[in-house]
Length: 87
Image 1 (cartoon, rainbow, N blue to C red):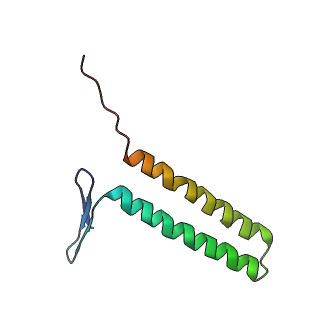
Image 2: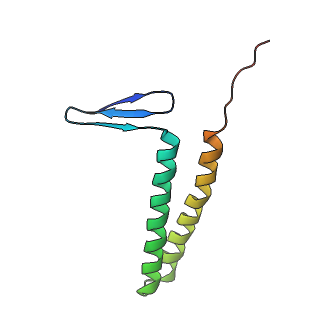
């Protein structure tokens, strides 16, 4: 089982044969979100193009729209910190 090490903004996945290092984990999450969103819009377009029932294409378009909304939220979370104030 790979071990996952977390640094402040980075994630490192270490297994016996390889190591994957992600710098800026929120940027990786954002890019993954973009790829998934694009694939959903492609799938929705293909479903509508080839005559699948309209509900399938509409559901995929709705999910992709939700993913488009997640991206700016990730950017807001990346640039927001909450900390305790000293008295």
